[in-house]
Structures are given as structure tokens and as C-alpha cells.
Image (tube, rainbow, N blue to C red; front, top):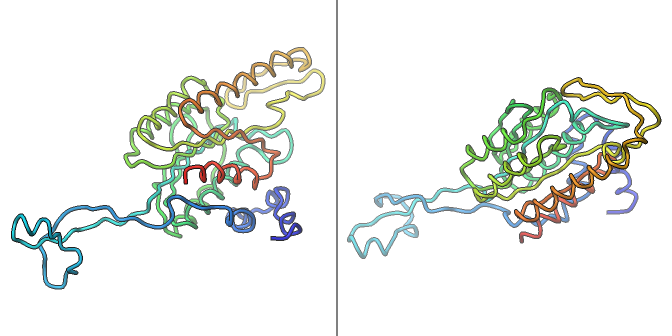
Length: 298
């Protein structure tokens, strides 16, 4: 791919496109699909059960060991399924609607989720979507059919950011309901009780799932780089405070640094991939980081 074409697929261009399907296609096919080598590509078959041999059954599936024991012919039946099921868990709470300039955390996350969905289905893996605030509002089970992509993109396109955040509640509910081991992708600003969120993520790891977190942030949430006296409003509770950022910036930045460090440390300890993303980062960069982490599993 030429340098000029790469420039064409910049995040500034992609963010101006209203069609999620087109965005996903540009990001995935136009920039990084060649980098991806899925350790789960294609299909596998798992032994399900025996059935008596009947006229027309293929002899290659006869269980000869069982015939030697029983003197009867039985056919091995198999269950064909995709090797990987991906569950995207998407935070739609009101805090995700924040933007200091340009794209909101929510819209950026929609573009990311759309691109991940496109990539998964492109390689024949199943992908589903759960959107939540205080509770799960939307739940689409994973499938690998092309029609699934249309359903996911339509759902993302029509979704709106609202409600308070209860991340841990959602994680525990989904960890209990998802029986087959798969890939769990959490997309959130993680603005909730950190210990509770980590316990929810550990629940997935305990059940044998792979987990990736895309921690979505606006750059001013990290820097608190505002002018003099300003009114801050909590998007979920409507509580407000007026302060001069320069008076609290030092302590704030230390607290934020500790917040990130603790997530990174605890995720590493529990073999969870933690990817911190700023909404000013190109979407392509976010997905490249995701692919690099996935390729480590090969």
C-alpha cells in the first residue's frame, strides 16, 4: 500500500464518514487486514456422539474401535463450529458522551467496535455485542454470518449514550451467562469503582476467557489542561463544581497516573490485555495494537 493511500485512511477522514460499514471497511481492509494472522482461522470439528451406521453414511466416519468391541457399526457425529467467539462489551453510559474537541468517546468507541466486528466476521469468527449502562440494554449473541455484521452495525449506529455506569454488575452477569470460552473485549472509559471492575474482569479469566480492555479516554481527562476558573459537570449525576484547574492539577494528574498504573499492573498480573486509547489517536493505531496483542497468541 502506498504512503498516499495510507494518508487517505487517516482518522480525520474516517471520523467524517457517517456510514459505520464504510468506516469499518476502510480501516480494516484499507490499512491492516494484511497484518492479521488469526490463530483461530477457519473451522474446527468437535466429536459430538455416535449413531448407528445406516445406508448412505460415509464409511470413513465408522468408529472401528467401537466395532471391535461391540461387533456393531457406529458413525461418529461431529459438530462444526467457528474456533473463536468474540463478545464485545460496550459501555454506553453518559460519561462516554464527553469530548473536549472533535469526536466523543462514545462515537470513537462505536467506530472501534464496528471495525472489530468487521475484522472478526471477515475471518469467519463469531462476534456478539452487549451494550450497558447500569444494566445490559442490548444483547446480541455471537454469530459469524455476514448478516450479523449488518445487525451489529445497525445497532451501533442507532445507539445513544445515556445512563449511569455499573460496569462490574454487567461483567459478572455476562461471565455467568457465557459458557463457551472465547474472547472478551471491553470498550469503556472505566469510570467506576476500580476494584469492582477488576473483580468482574477476573471472573472472566477464572472461567478461561481471553480478555482485552480498550480503555477510551479524552486527552483532557488525562491532562486537565483547561484555562482558569471553570465549571465541571458530572455527565451521569449532574453534580457540578467550580474550580481553578491550576489549583488541583498536580494532585489530579498523580491520581490519574495511579489509576492507569493500577489497571495496567492488575491486568498484567491476571493476563488481561490492557490498551489505553486516547480519542485523539488514529483509529488505525488502536486496531494495530489490538492485532499485535492477538498475534502474540499464535
